[in-house]
Length: 198
Image (cartoon, rainbow, N blue to C red; front, side):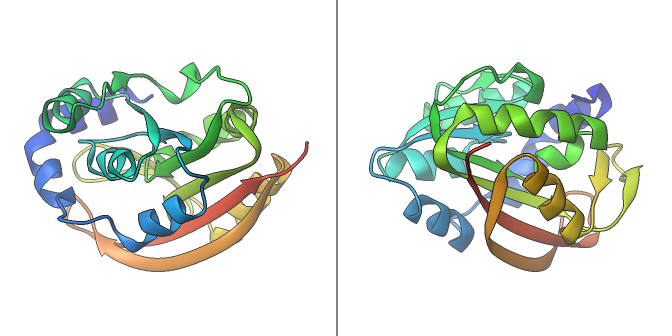
């Protein structure tokens, strides 16, 4: 994980909590939960301050919440008692373990080569027919925003192709745009995949 990006999240923790605060789960999270079996085991990969993980926990799911930012993990545990832990994308080593993985605007901080390397790891961590939710900003290239966070941008069709190469089948797509922590309006795509046989 890019150290400068993690440092920004550690420093901007209060602003990020305010930005992501919500009284109820967003529709994409509700649909993700609805695709999973009762009492599903879910990895929240890049849990941030923990609101999504808490909503999944309240829905009766077992949550493994991780983030590379120690401040994000601290807040997630203080607010929601999630037992969240500090971990990077590369530290995932489970096999046939999760019913779902929630990666909501976290993997966009990986470089393209890191992203490609991580996908088979996520596939191994999921049970067969497990569900992967992926939120990504769309575009092309790699750059830092005005706060110093590193982003890698992809066209939607490239993301789908990369996931297909890792034996993920796209089952739902949603597009939109939103203002992020840096104050810029940017387009995004929300993709839901199912892990098929390798």
